[in-house]
Image 1 (cartoon, rainbow over the protein chains, first blue to last red):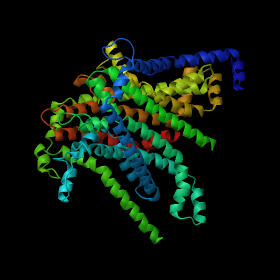
Image 2 (image 1 turned 180 degrees about the vertical axis):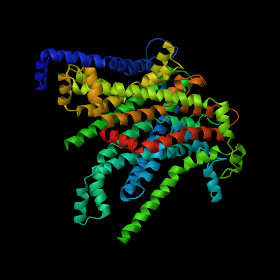
Image 3 (image 1 turned 60 degrees about the horizontal axis):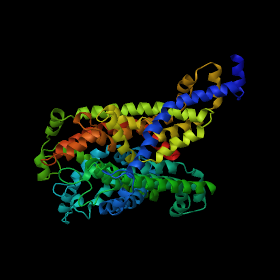
Image 4 (image 1 turned 90 degrees about the vertical axis):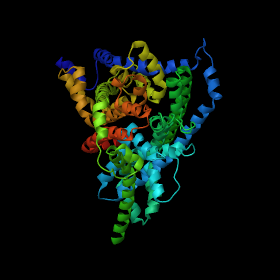
Length: 306
Length: 274
Protein backbone atom coordinates (compact mmCIF):
# COMPACT_ATOMS: atom_id res chain seq x y z
CA UNK A 1 0.00 0.00 0.00
CA UNK A 2 2.74 2.37 0.98
CA UNK A 3 4.76 1.53 -2.11
CA UNK A 4 1.78 2.08 -4.32
CA UNK A 5 1.24 5.38 -2.69
CA UNK A 6 4.80 6.40 -3.40
CA UNK A 7 4.20 5.87 -7.10
CA UNK A 8 1.05 7.90 -6.96
CA UNK A 9 2.89 10.78 -5.41
CA UNK A 10 4.99 11.04 -8.53
CA UNK A 11 1.84 12.10 -10.31
CA UNK A 12 0.96 9.02 -12.38
CA UNK A 13 -1.90 6.81 -11.46
CA UNK A 14 -1.81 3.13 -12.09
CA UNK A 15 -4.47 1.63 -14.37
CA UNK A 16 -6.24 0.12 -11.41
CA UNK A 17 -6.24 3.40 -9.52
CA UNK A 18 -7.55 5.10 -12.62
CA UNK A 19 -10.67 2.98 -12.83
CA UNK A 20 -11.14 3.24 -9.11
CA UNK A 21 -11.00 7.04 -9.37
CA UNK A 22 -13.50 7.02 -12.23
CA UNK A 23 -15.86 4.80 -10.23
CA UNK A 24 -15.71 7.19 -7.28
CA UNK A 25 -16.33 10.16 -9.56
CA UNK A 26 -19.43 8.54 -11.00
CA UNK A 27 -20.62 7.68 -7.52
CA UNK A 28 -20.21 11.31 -6.39
CA UNK A 29 -22.05 12.54 -9.47
CA UNK A 30 -24.91 10.05 -9.36
CA UNK A 31 -27.41 12.07 -7.32
CA UNK A 32 -26.52 15.40 -9.00
CA UNK A 33 -26.99 13.88 -12.43
CA UNK A 34 -30.38 12.50 -11.50
CA UNK A 35 -31.27 15.95 -10.17
CA UNK A 36 -30.12 17.98 -13.16
CA UNK A 37 -31.72 15.58 -15.61
CA UNK A 38 -34.94 15.20 -13.66
CA UNK A 39 -35.49 18.71 -12.30
CA UNK A 40 -33.90 20.82 -15.05
CA UNK A 41 -33.47 19.06 -18.42
CA UNK A 42 -36.57 16.87 -18.44
CA UNK A 43 -38.95 19.68 -17.37
CA UNK A 44 -37.50 21.88 -20.12
CA UNK A 45 -38.27 19.26 -22.74
CA UNK A 46 -41.67 18.76 -21.14
CA UNK A 47 -42.42 22.49 -21.39
CA UNK A 48 -41.47 22.45 -25.09
CA UNK A 49 -43.82 19.57 -25.81
CA UNK A 50 -46.55 21.15 -23.72
CA UNK A 51 -46.31 24.37 -25.72
CA UNK A 52 -47.22 22.40 -28.86
CA UNK A 53 -50.38 20.90 -27.40
CA UNK A 54 -53.49 23.04 -27.33
CA UNK A 55 -55.70 22.78 -24.25
CA UNK A 56 -58.73 20.62 -24.98
CA UNK A 57 -57.31 19.28 -28.25
CA UNK A 58 -55.53 16.03 -29.11
CA UNK A 59 -52.11 15.80 -30.71
CA UNK A 60 -49.50 18.42 -31.33
CA UNK A 61 -49.89 21.64 -33.29
CA UNK A 62 -48.69 25.20 -33.54
CA UNK A 63 -52.04 26.34 -32.17
CA UNK A 64 -50.64 28.15 -29.12
CA UNK A 65 -48.05 29.98 -31.16
CA UNK A 66 -50.61 31.06 -33.75
CA UNK A 67 -52.78 32.36 -30.93
CA UNK A 68 -49.80 34.16 -29.37
CA UNK A 69 -49.08 35.85 -32.67
CA UNK A 70 -52.60 37.28 -32.74
CA UNK A 71 -52.78 38.09 -29.03
CA UNK A 72 -52.54 41.87 -28.45
CA UNK A 73 -51.97 41.49 -24.70
CA UNK A 74 -49.01 39.21 -25.36
CA UNK A 75 -47.46 41.75 -27.72
CA UNK A 76 -48.15 44.50 -25.24
CA UNK A 77 -46.35 42.46 -22.58
CA UNK A 78 -43.39 41.82 -24.90
CA UNK A 79 -43.18 45.53 -25.71
CA UNK A 80 -43.38 46.45 -22.01
CA UNK A 81 -40.65 43.94 -21.18
CA UNK A 82 -38.36 45.55 -23.74
CA UNK A 83 -39.22 48.97 -22.34
CA UNK A 84 -38.25 47.76 -18.86
CA UNK A 85 -34.97 46.53 -20.30
CA UNK A 86 -34.19 49.70 -22.27
CA UNK A 87 -35.13 52.02 -19.42
CA UNK A 88 -33.66 50.22 -16.44
CA UNK A 89 -30.41 48.63 -17.66
CA UNK A 90 -28.60 51.78 -18.91
CA UNK A 91 -29.75 53.83 -15.93
CA UNK A 92 -28.85 51.29 -13.29
CA UNK A 93 -25.40 50.98 -14.88
CA UNK A 94 -24.94 54.74 -15.10
CA UNK A 95 -26.00 55.37 -11.51
CA UNK A 96 -24.00 52.41 -10.24
CA UNK A 97 -20.87 53.64 -12.00
CA UNK A 98 -21.31 57.23 -10.80
CA UNK A 99 -21.78 56.13 -7.21
CA UNK A 100 -18.82 53.75 -7.41
CA UNK A 101 -16.60 56.52 -8.81
CA UNK A 102 -17.77 58.83 -6.05
CA UNK A 103 -17.03 56.27 -3.37
CA UNK A 104 -13.61 55.57 -4.87
CA UNK A 105 -12.83 59.29 -4.68
CA UNK A 106 -13.69 59.99 -1.08
CA UNK A 107 -11.72 58.52 1.76
CA UNK A 108 -14.10 58.85 4.65
CA UNK A 109 -17.43 57.09 5.15
CA UNK A 110 -16.79 54.66 2.31
CA UNK A 111 -18.22 51.74 4.23
CA UNK A 112 -21.29 53.81 5.13
CA UNK A 113 -22.06 54.72 1.52
CA UNK A 114 -21.43 51.19 0.36
CA UNK A 115 -23.84 49.75 2.93
CA UNK A 116 -26.64 52.24 2.32
CA UNK A 117 -26.53 52.02 -1.48
CA UNK A 118 -26.45 48.27 -1.33
CA UNK A 119 -29.42 47.92 1.06
CA UNK A 120 -32.21 47.93 -1.56
CA UNK A 121 -30.61 45.06 -3.46
CA UNK A 122 -30.46 42.69 -0.53
CA UNK A 123 -33.78 43.41 1.14
CA UNK A 124 -36.96 41.52 0.37
CA UNK A 125 -38.37 42.54 -3.02
CA UNK A 126 -41.92 41.98 -1.84
CA UNK A 127 -41.54 44.12 1.27
CA UNK A 128 -39.97 47.07 -0.53
CA UNK A 129 -42.47 46.83 -3.40
CA UNK A 130 -45.24 47.47 -0.90
CA UNK A 131 -43.39 50.44 0.50
CA UNK A 132 -43.10 51.92 -2.99
CA UNK A 133 -46.73 51.18 -3.62
CA UNK A 134 -47.63 53.19 -0.54
CA UNK A 135 -45.38 56.06 -1.62
CA UNK A 136 -46.88 56.02 -5.12
CA UNK A 137 -50.50 55.92 -3.93
CA UNK A 138 -52.26 58.79 -5.68
CA UNK A 139 -54.43 59.64 -2.65
CA UNK A 140 -52.31 59.01 0.42
CA UNK A 141 -48.85 58.60 -1.11
CA UNK A 142 -45.98 60.75 0.04
CA UNK A 143 -44.88 61.61 -3.51
CA UNK A 144 -48.13 63.39 -4.30
CA UNK A 145 -48.05 65.08 -0.91
CA UNK A 146 -44.61 66.45 -1.71
CA UNK A 147 -45.85 67.71 -5.08
CA UNK A 148 -48.81 69.31 -3.34
CA UNK A 149 -46.59 71.12 -0.87
CA UNK A 150 -44.49 72.39 -3.77
CA UNK A 151 -47.69 73.49 -5.57
CA UNK A 152 -46.98 71.14 -8.46
CA UNK A 153 -49.68 69.11 -10.21
CA UNK A 154 -50.26 65.74 -8.58
CA UNK A 155 -49.61 62.62 -10.64
CA UNK A 156 -51.39 59.31 -11.06
CA UNK A 157 -48.18 57.26 -10.77
CA UNK A 158 -49.16 53.59 -10.75
CA UNK A 159 -52.83 54.33 -11.42
CA UNK A 160 -52.10 56.22 -14.65
CA UNK A 161 -51.54 53.89 -17.64
CA UNK A 162 -49.06 56.38 -19.10
CA UNK A 163 -46.96 56.58 -15.94
CA UNK A 164 -47.27 53.12 -14.42
CA UNK A 165 -44.47 51.49 -16.39
CA UNK A 166 -42.09 54.33 -15.59
CA UNK A 167 -43.07 54.14 -11.93
CA UNK A 168 -42.27 50.43 -11.83
CA UNK A 169 -39.00 51.10 -13.67
CA UNK A 170 -37.95 53.71 -11.10
CA UNK A 171 -38.25 51.12 -8.37
CA UNK A 172 -36.34 48.54 -10.41
CA UNK A 173 -33.49 51.03 -10.89
CA UNK A 174 -33.53 51.97 -7.20
CA UNK A 175 -33.16 48.30 -6.37
CA UNK A 176 -30.53 47.21 -8.88
CA UNK A 177 -28.18 50.16 -8.57
CA UNK A 178 -26.68 48.78 -5.36
CA UNK A 179 -25.64 45.65 -7.19
CA UNK A 180 -24.08 47.44 -10.17
CA UNK A 181 -22.29 49.80 -7.77
CA UNK A 182 -20.74 46.88 -5.92
CA UNK A 183 -19.53 45.16 -9.08
CA UNK A 184 -18.18 48.45 -10.44
CA UNK A 185 -16.31 49.01 -7.17
CA UNK A 186 -14.71 45.58 -7.55
CA UNK A 187 -13.90 46.42 -11.17
CA UNK A 188 -12.37 49.76 -10.25
CA UNK A 189 -10.22 48.18 -7.59
CA UNK A 190 -8.94 45.76 -10.22
CA UNK A 191 -7.39 48.56 -12.27
CA UNK A 192 -3.65 48.79 -11.49
CA UNK A 193 -2.61 52.03 -9.72
CA UNK A 194 0.39 52.45 -12.02
CA UNK A 195 -1.90 53.37 -14.92
CA UNK A 196 -3.24 56.34 -13.03
CA UNK A 197 0.19 57.35 -11.80
CA UNK A 198 1.51 57.25 -15.36
CA UNK A 199 -1.42 59.35 -16.57
CA UNK A 200 -0.76 61.88 -13.83
CA UNK A 201 2.89 62.15 -14.79
CA UNK A 202 1.85 62.72 -18.41
CA UNK A 203 -0.41 65.51 -17.18
CA UNK A 204 -3.64 63.93 -18.42
CA UNK A 205 -6.83 65.57 -17.15
CA UNK A 206 -9.22 63.66 -14.87
CA UNK A 207 -11.76 63.57 -17.67
CA UNK A 208 -9.29 62.17 -20.15
CA UNK A 209 -7.97 59.66 -17.62
CA UNK A 210 -11.50 58.38 -17.12
CA UNK A 211 -12.24 57.92 -20.82
CA UNK A 212 -8.81 56.60 -21.81
CA UNK A 213 -8.05 54.35 -18.85
CA UNK A 214 -10.94 53.69 -16.47
CA UNK A 215 -13.74 53.22 -18.98
CA UNK A 216 -11.94 50.86 -21.40
CA UNK A 217 -10.66 48.74 -18.52
CA UNK A 218 -14.18 48.51 -17.11
CA UNK A 219 -15.50 47.10 -20.38
CA UNK A 220 -15.72 43.48 -19.17
CA UNK A 221 -17.57 44.67 -16.05
CA UNK A 222 -19.98 46.70 -18.16
CA UNK A 223 -20.62 43.75 -20.45
CA UNK A 224 -21.23 41.46 -17.48
CA UNK A 225 -23.64 43.91 -15.84
CA UNK A 226 -25.47 44.56 -19.11
CA UNK A 227 -26.06 40.86 -19.66
CA UNK A 228 -27.11 40.19 -16.07
CA UNK A 229 -29.33 43.28 -16.10
CA UNK A 230 -30.90 42.37 -19.43
CA UNK A 231 -31.69 38.81 -18.34
CA UNK A 232 -33.12 40.02 -15.02
CA UNK A 233 -35.29 42.67 -16.62
CA UNK A 234 -36.68 40.10 -19.08
CA UNK A 235 -37.79 38.14 -16.01
CA UNK A 236 -39.39 41.05 -14.13
CA UNK A 237 -42.34 39.72 -12.17
CA UNK A 238 -42.35 40.06 -8.39
CA UNK A 239 -42.21 43.87 -8.36
CA UNK A 240 -45.06 44.17 -10.86
CA UNK A 241 -47.32 41.74 -9.01
CA UNK A 242 -46.82 43.51 -5.70
CA UNK A 243 -47.04 47.03 -7.05
CA UNK A 244 -50.18 46.48 -9.12
CA UNK A 245 -52.04 43.34 -8.01
CA UNK A 246 -54.87 42.85 -5.55
CA UNK A 247 -58.23 44.22 -4.74
CA UNK A 248 -57.39 47.78 -5.72
CA UNK A 249 -55.93 46.83 -9.08
CA UNK A 250 -55.13 44.00 -11.47
CA UNK A 251 -51.74 42.37 -11.88
CA UNK A 252 -49.97 44.11 -14.76
CA UNK A 253 -52.56 46.87 -14.79
CA UNK A 254 -53.88 49.41 -15.31
CA UNK A 255 -54.92 48.30 -18.82
CA UNK A 256 -51.93 45.91 -19.03
CA UNK A 257 -49.64 48.93 -19.05
CA UNK A 258 -47.16 47.28 -16.68
CA UNK A 259 -47.64 43.65 -17.72
CA UNK A 260 -44.42 41.81 -18.59
CA UNK A 261 -43.87 38.50 -20.35
CA UNK A 262 -43.62 36.63 -17.06
CA UNK A 263 -46.64 38.42 -15.59
CA UNK A 264 -48.68 37.39 -18.63
CA UNK A 265 -47.37 33.83 -18.38
CA UNK A 266 -48.35 33.71 -14.70
CA UNK A 267 -51.86 34.98 -15.41
CA UNK A 268 -52.38 32.52 -18.26
CA UNK A 269 -50.88 29.54 -16.43
CA UNK A 270 -51.93 30.02 -12.84
CA UNK A 271 -55.00 32.27 -12.98
CA UNK A 272 -56.71 30.97 -16.11
CA UNK A 273 -54.96 27.57 -15.81
CA UNK A 274 -54.11 27.35 -19.48
CA UNK A 275 -50.68 25.86 -18.84
CA UNK A 276 -50.17 24.84 -22.46
CA UNK A 277 -50.56 28.42 -23.60
CA UNK A 278 -48.37 29.63 -20.72
CA UNK A 279 -45.69 27.12 -21.79
CA UNK A 280 -45.60 28.67 -25.24
CA UNK A 281 -44.99 32.06 -23.62
CA UNK A 282 -42.09 30.66 -21.58
CA UNK A 283 -40.57 29.13 -24.71
CA UNK A 284 -40.49 32.61 -26.25
CA UNK A 285 -38.79 33.89 -23.08
CA UNK A 286 -36.32 31.00 -23.16
CA UNK A 287 -35.33 31.84 -26.74
CA UNK A 288 -34.79 35.50 -25.82
CA UNK A 289 -32.56 34.63 -22.86
CA UNK A 290 -30.65 32.10 -24.93
CA UNK A 291 -29.99 34.73 -27.61
CA UNK A 292 -28.64 37.17 -25.03
CA UNK A 293 -26.41 34.46 -23.56
CA UNK A 294 -25.07 33.52 -26.99
CA UNK A 295 -24.35 37.16 -27.86
CA UNK A 296 -22.50 37.47 -24.56
CA UNK A 297 -20.40 34.40 -25.27
CA UNK A 298 -19.58 35.78 -28.69
CA UNK A 299 -18.56 39.18 -27.31
CA UNK A 300 -16.46 37.56 -24.59
CA UNK A 301 -14.65 35.40 -27.12
CA UNK A 302 -13.86 38.46 -29.19
CA UNK A 303 -12.39 40.08 -26.10
CA UNK A 304 -10.15 37.08 -25.57
CA UNK A 305 -9.04 37.12 -29.20
CA UNK A 306 -8.06 40.75 -29.07
CA UNK B 1 -4.64 70.94 -1.72
CA UNK B 2 -7.41 73.27 -0.73
CA UNK B 3 -9.10 72.95 -4.12
CA UNK B 4 -9.05 69.19 -3.81
CA UNK B 5 -10.83 69.39 -0.50
CA UNK B 6 -13.69 71.44 -1.93
CA UNK B 7 -14.23 68.98 -4.74
CA UNK B 8 -14.22 66.21 -2.14
CA UNK B 9 -16.95 67.96 -0.22
CA UNK B 10 -19.02 68.22 -3.39
CA UNK B 11 -18.65 64.48 -3.96
CA UNK B 12 -19.71 63.86 -0.37
CA UNK B 13 -22.76 66.07 -0.82
CA UNK B 14 -23.77 64.27 -4.01
CA UNK B 15 -23.34 60.90 -2.35
CA UNK B 16 -25.38 62.07 0.63
CA UNK B 17 -28.16 63.19 -1.71
CA UNK B 18 -28.11 59.66 -3.13
CA UNK B 19 -28.17 58.22 0.38
CA UNK B 20 -31.31 60.21 1.19
CA UNK B 21 -33.10 58.93 -1.93
CA UNK B 22 -32.02 55.34 -1.37
CA UNK B 23 -32.76 55.27 2.34
CA UNK B 24 -36.02 57.21 2.31
CA UNK B 25 -38.29 54.24 1.50
CA UNK B 26 -36.89 52.38 4.50
CA UNK B 27 -37.48 55.32 6.81
CA UNK B 28 -40.95 55.74 5.38
CA UNK B 29 -41.69 52.06 5.92
CA UNK B 30 -40.79 52.20 9.62
CA UNK B 31 -42.63 55.49 10.16
CA UNK B 32 -45.74 54.17 8.43
CA UNK B 33 -45.78 51.04 10.54
CA UNK B 34 -46.33 53.06 13.71
CA UNK B 35 -49.10 55.25 12.29
CA UNK B 36 -52.75 54.64 12.88
CA UNK B 37 -54.90 54.15 9.79
CA UNK B 38 -56.49 57.62 10.04
CA UNK B 39 -52.97 59.09 10.00
CA UNK B 40 -52.58 57.85 6.45
CA UNK B 41 -55.60 59.76 5.23
CA UNK B 42 -54.92 62.84 7.30
CA UNK B 43 -51.47 62.79 5.82
CA UNK B 44 -49.01 63.61 8.50
CA UNK B 45 -45.35 63.10 7.84
CA UNK B 46 -44.73 62.00 11.41
CA UNK B 47 -47.26 59.80 13.16
CA UNK B 48 -49.65 61.87 15.34
CA UNK B 49 -48.77 59.57 18.15
CA UNK B 50 -46.97 56.25 18.12
CA UNK B 51 -49.47 53.54 17.37
CA UNK B 52 -48.36 49.95 17.73
CA UNK B 53 -51.71 48.39 16.95
CA UNK B 54 -50.34 47.14 13.61
CA UNK B 55 -47.74 45.08 15.42
CA UNK B 56 -50.27 43.84 17.92
CA UNK B 57 -52.46 42.79 15.03
CA UNK B 58 -49.55 41.03 13.29
CA UNK B 59 -48.63 39.13 16.45
CA UNK B 60 -52.15 38.13 17.38
CA UNK B 61 -54.22 37.87 14.25
CA UNK B 62 -51.93 36.76 11.45
CA UNK B 63 -49.68 33.80 10.77
CA UNK B 64 -46.76 36.10 10.15
CA UNK B 65 -44.33 34.24 12.38
CA UNK B 66 -45.27 30.94 10.83
CA UNK B 67 -44.29 32.44 7.45
CA UNK B 68 -41.07 33.67 8.98
CA UNK B 69 -40.32 30.19 10.25
CA UNK B 70 -41.14 28.64 6.87
CA UNK B 71 -38.76 31.02 5.12
CA UNK B 72 -35.98 30.21 7.56
CA UNK B 73 -36.50 26.45 7.19
CA UNK B 74 -36.51 26.58 3.40
CA UNK B 75 -33.58 28.98 3.05
CA UNK B 76 -31.41 27.10 5.58
CA UNK B 77 -32.03 23.66 4.10
CA UNK B 78 -31.46 24.82 0.52
CA UNK B 79 -28.28 26.65 1.53
CA UNK B 80 -26.90 23.51 3.18
CA UNK B 81 -27.75 21.22 0.26
CA UNK B 82 -26.22 23.68 -2.20
CA UNK B 83 -23.00 23.97 -0.21
CA UNK B 84 -22.65 20.20 -0.01
CA UNK B 85 -23.70 19.22 -3.51
CA UNK B 86 -22.19 22.10 -5.47
CA UNK B 87 -18.83 21.70 -3.79
CA UNK B 88 -18.87 17.92 -4.21
CA UNK B 89 -19.77 18.20 -7.89
CA UNK B 90 -17.29 21.02 -8.44
CA UNK B 91 -14.57 19.03 -6.69
CA UNK B 92 -15.27 15.90 -8.69
CA UNK B 93 -15.32 17.78 -11.99
CA UNK B 94 -12.12 19.64 -11.15
CA UNK B 95 -10.04 16.89 -9.61
CA UNK B 96 -11.04 13.50 -11.00
CA UNK B 97 -10.09 11.97 -14.36
CA UNK B 98 -12.90 10.04 -15.99
CA UNK B 99 -14.55 9.80 -19.36
CA UNK B 100 -17.58 12.02 -19.83
CA UNK B 101 -16.24 14.69 -17.51
CA UNK B 102 -16.59 17.47 -20.03
CA UNK B 103 -20.01 16.34 -21.20
CA UNK B 104 -21.35 16.26 -17.65
CA UNK B 105 -19.94 19.71 -16.92
CA UNK B 106 -21.47 21.20 -20.07
CA UNK B 107 -24.77 19.50 -19.34
CA UNK B 108 -24.92 21.05 -15.87
CA UNK B 109 -23.69 24.41 -17.14
CA UNK B 110 -26.28 24.53 -19.91
CA UNK B 111 -29.07 24.46 -17.33
CA UNK B 112 -28.00 27.97 -16.30
CA UNK B 113 -29.65 29.24 -19.47
CA UNK B 114 -33.04 27.78 -18.61
CA UNK B 115 -35.23 30.42 -16.97
CA UNK B 116 -37.08 29.39 -13.81
CA UNK B 117 -40.23 30.74 -15.44
CA UNK B 118 -40.07 27.96 -18.00
CA UNK B 119 -39.68 25.28 -15.37
CA UNK B 120 -42.41 26.29 -12.94
CA UNK B 121 -45.17 24.81 -15.10
CA UNK B 122 -43.60 21.33 -15.36
CA UNK B 123 -42.63 21.51 -11.68
CA UNK B 124 -46.20 22.32 -10.78
CA UNK B 125 -47.53 19.42 -12.86
CA UNK B 126 -44.95 17.18 -11.19
CA UNK B 127 -45.78 18.44 -7.71
CA UNK B 128 -49.48 17.90 -8.30
CA UNK B 129 -48.87 14.34 -9.50
CA UNK B 130 -46.68 13.41 -6.54
CA UNK B 131 -48.60 15.34 -3.87
CA UNK B 132 -45.81 17.83 -3.22
CA UNK B 133 -48.04 20.88 -3.45
CA UNK B 134 -48.14 22.83 -0.19
CA UNK B 135 -45.25 20.97 1.46
CA UNK B 136 -41.74 22.07 2.44
CA UNK B 137 -40.34 19.56 0.00
CA UNK B 138 -42.45 21.11 -2.75
CA UNK B 139 -41.08 24.57 -2.04
CA UNK B 140 -37.45 23.56 -1.83
CA UNK B 141 -36.86 20.65 -4.23
CA UNK B 142 -36.17 22.81 -7.32
CA UNK B 143 -33.36 24.64 -5.52
CA UNK B 144 -31.42 21.74 -3.99
CA UNK B 145 -28.49 22.48 -6.30
CA UNK B 146 -27.75 25.20 -8.83
CA UNK B 147 -25.52 25.11 -11.88
CA UNK B 148 -24.07 28.46 -10.93
CA UNK B 149 -22.82 27.04 -7.63
CA UNK B 150 -21.26 24.09 -9.43
CA UNK B 151 -19.52 26.47 -11.81
CA UNK B 152 -18.23 28.62 -8.96
CA UNK B 153 -17.00 25.70 -6.87
CA UNK B 154 -15.31 24.02 -9.81
CA UNK B 155 -13.35 27.22 -10.45
CA UNK B 156 -12.10 27.32 -6.89
CA UNK B 157 -11.53 23.58 -6.50
CA UNK B 158 -9.28 23.68 -9.58
CA UNK B 159 -6.93 25.91 -7.62
CA UNK B 160 -6.21 23.26 -4.98
CA UNK B 161 -2.80 21.65 -5.58
CA UNK B 162 -3.01 17.97 -6.57
CA UNK B 163 -0.07 17.14 -4.33
CA UNK B 164 -2.12 18.04 -1.30
CA UNK B 165 -4.81 15.53 -2.27
CA UNK B 166 -2.29 12.86 -3.24
CA UNK B 167 -0.55 13.26 0.09
CA UNK B 168 -3.83 12.49 1.83
CA UNK B 169 -4.31 9.46 -0.44
CA UNK B 170 -0.87 8.18 0.52
CA UNK B 171 -1.90 8.47 4.13
CA UNK B 172 -4.76 6.15 3.24
CA UNK B 173 -7.56 8.68 3.61
CA UNK B 174 -10.81 7.78 1.85
CA UNK B 175 -11.89 9.87 -1.14
CA UNK B 176 -15.00 11.19 0.55
CA UNK B 177 -12.98 12.24 3.56
CA UNK B 178 -10.37 13.92 1.35
CA UNK B 179 -13.08 16.09 -0.17
CA UNK B 180 -14.57 16.97 3.19
CA UNK B 181 -11.44 17.35 5.30
CA UNK B 182 -8.79 18.51 2.81
CA UNK B 183 -10.52 20.19 -0.13
CA UNK B 184 -13.42 21.95 1.62
CA UNK B 185 -11.29 24.02 4.06
CA UNK B 186 -9.25 25.26 1.07
CA UNK B 187 -12.24 26.96 -0.55
CA UNK B 188 -13.84 28.60 2.48
CA UNK B 189 -14.22 32.08 0.89
CA UNK B 190 -16.04 30.58 -2.08
CA UNK B 191 -18.23 28.52 0.23
CA UNK B 192 -19.27 31.54 2.27
CA UNK B 193 -19.99 33.51 -0.91
CA UNK B 194 -22.11 30.69 -2.30
CA UNK B 195 -23.86 30.25 1.04
CA UNK B 196 -24.77 33.92 1.31
CA UNK B 197 -26.01 34.15 -2.28
CA UNK B 198 -28.07 30.99 -1.97
CA UNK B 199 -29.60 32.08 1.30
CA UNK B 200 -30.51 35.54 -0.01
CA UNK B 201 -31.90 34.13 -3.24
CA UNK B 202 -34.15 31.66 -1.46
CA UNK B 203 -35.12 34.06 1.29
CA UNK B 204 -36.46 36.42 -1.35
CA UNK B 205 -37.83 33.79 -3.76
CA UNK B 206 -41.37 34.52 -4.82
CA UNK B 207 -42.51 33.01 -8.13
CA UNK B 208 -42.21 29.33 -7.28
CA UNK B 209 -43.31 29.56 -3.59
CA UNK B 210 -46.42 31.53 -4.58
CA UNK B 211 -47.31 28.83 -7.11
CA UNK B 212 -46.62 25.76 -5.00
CA UNK B 213 -48.22 26.86 -1.73
CA UNK B 214 -51.95 26.89 -1.29
CA UNK B 215 -52.69 27.21 2.43
CA UNK B 216 -51.65 30.14 4.60
CA UNK B 217 -49.72 27.69 6.82
CA UNK B 218 -47.14 26.91 4.19
CA UNK B 219 -46.48 30.39 2.85
CA UNK B 220 -43.00 31.79 2.97
CA UNK B 221 -42.47 35.34 4.17
CA UNK B 222 -42.63 37.10 0.77
CA UNK B 223 -45.65 35.06 -0.29
CA UNK B 224 -47.40 35.71 3.01
CA UNK B 225 -46.89 39.47 2.87
CA UNK B 226 -47.83 39.64 -0.79
CA UNK B 227 -51.03 37.63 -0.49
CA UNK B 228 -52.00 39.43 2.69
CA UNK B 229 -51.64 42.71 0.85
CA UNK B 230 -53.45 41.71 -2.30
CA UNK B 231 -56.26 39.70 -0.76
CA UNK B 232 -57.76 42.57 1.21
CA UNK B 233 -61.30 43.14 0.15
CA UNK B 234 -61.88 46.08 2.48
CA UNK B 235 -58.94 48.14 1.26
CA UNK B 236 -55.29 47.84 2.08
CA UNK B 237 -54.34 47.88 5.78
CA UNK B 238 -51.29 50.00 5.17
CA UNK B 239 -49.96 50.10 8.71
CA UNK B 240 -50.14 46.31 9.02
CA UNK B 241 -48.33 45.76 5.73
CA UNK B 242 -45.67 48.29 6.64
CA UNK B 243 -45.30 46.55 10.00
CA UNK B 244 -44.83 43.20 8.25
CA UNK B 245 -42.34 44.74 5.85
CA UNK B 246 -40.44 46.29 8.73
CA UNK B 247 -40.29 42.99 10.58
CA UNK B 248 -39.09 41.29 7.41
CA UNK B 249 -36.52 43.90 6.42
CA UNK B 250 -35.00 45.21 9.65
CA UNK B 251 -33.56 41.90 10.94
CA UNK B 252 -32.06 41.36 7.49
CA UNK B 253 -30.42 44.77 7.65
CA UNK B 254 -28.98 43.97 11.08
CA UNK B 255 -27.60 40.65 9.86
CA UNK B 256 -26.22 42.47 6.85
CA UNK B 257 -24.44 45.00 9.05
CA UNK B 258 -22.75 42.15 10.91
CA UNK B 259 -21.68 40.28 7.81
CA UNK B 260 -21.44 43.18 5.41
CA UNK B 261 -17.79 42.62 4.62
CA UNK B 262 -18.34 38.93 3.84
CA UNK B 263 -21.50 39.63 1.84
CA UNK B 264 -19.92 42.42 -0.18
CA UNK B 265 -16.81 40.32 -0.82
CA UNK B 266 -18.93 37.33 -1.78
CA UNK B 267 -20.99 39.20 -4.31
CA UNK B 268 -17.98 41.00 -5.78
CA UNK B 269 -16.15 37.70 -6.00
CA UNK B 270 -18.91 35.96 -7.91
CA UNK B 271 -19.49 39.03 -10.03
CA UNK B 272 -15.89 39.19 -11.11
CA UNK B 273 -15.58 35.46 -11.62
CA UNK B 274 -18.91 35.09 -13.34
